Length: 252
Image 1 (cartoon, rainbow, N blue to C red):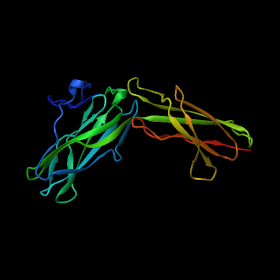
Image 2 (cartoon, rainbow, N blue to C red; image 1 turned 90 degrees about the vertical axis):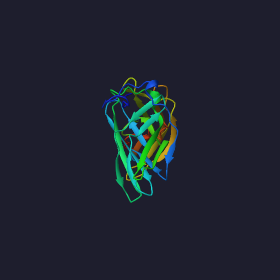
Image 3 (cartoon, rainbow, N blue to C red; image 1 turned 120 degrees about the horizontal axis):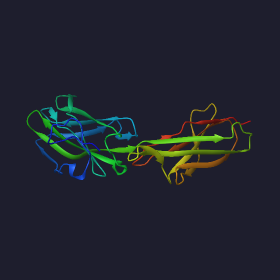
Image 4 (cartoon, helix red, strand yellow; image 1 turned 135 degrees about the horizontal axis):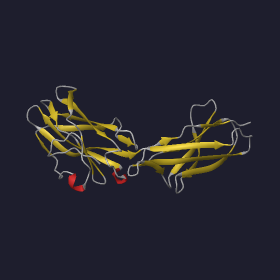
């Protein structure tokens, strides 16, 4: 994984090692400056695949009775010695006392050397300066899920099918392997089989199926009426939720 260099004038990032992570610092503040909110990518979830670069946006809201002057680069730290650093934040005042400081970092799975253990809960460390010289430095000011992108497929057959006959529904749950830059089956996971009747706008769950040792899914149902079958995965800490595109079956 690349990281922002802290001792050399480097605009890119360097391969991650345990030694590359800065020494931990204690939380601290001077005066009444406080961090009140941290948001990463809008919903505190970041999904990264195997080929497309991803810009991670970090917003830190802080308050001080004299107003916020600026913020230093935000540090992002996670499992497996994960470490990233944003660019210089831009602070926008919401009032005379409160500002939101926003910065981003570009990650690329093809060049950043992420390892699968890097997936999970990451934390944001932030330093914010106030106009009157006060400041706040907070480790783990906020958290987000850094996840291996997921895929889910479904196929219901035969099509068409006579009412009362058996429909076999297969599919596969897979997720990004950051080390091989390929998608691999996500094993032993609970996945819901859902059905949406033709003309309806909502799915109902029929049963729960476990993915096998290669991520494959397979179950059967009895044909009753025209509609769409899909698999739905609720997600885990390391892997985002995903729904397969519904597969229509004509029941005759």
